[in-house]
Length: 171
Image: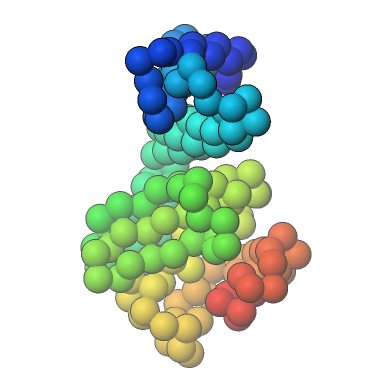
């Protein structure tokens, strides 16, 4: 969903809180009457970003691309032995490409990955699935990951796209 306009409604009854919701393509913001303009601008920008991220996450996960690929890779690389509770794109994960909780079987993939080529997205999914089998970055883990034929190429792509901090966790 795209925000085409912002409508600010000031209220004498509101004392401290500012809220926002989408009505069609308009972001309707309700704010106290006496809130300073500079403060309101900051709050509106934060609310707008939060709502845009919410809709982006919904849009990215709508077609269940990650779930479909995870099921395929579970069959292809792991003989359907992995317990995948959930796998989804998230918009609040900017310092990592993906993360996996091997205890709960939940995988989170950064929304930044969605704009990358499919073979890179597939690599990130396989990397996180491998953590369900081997939680650390041991030789056994890399043996699993490197069975993906484009693993080295995808790592190179991610290194070029990532930060120094990310590279340390993906080596």
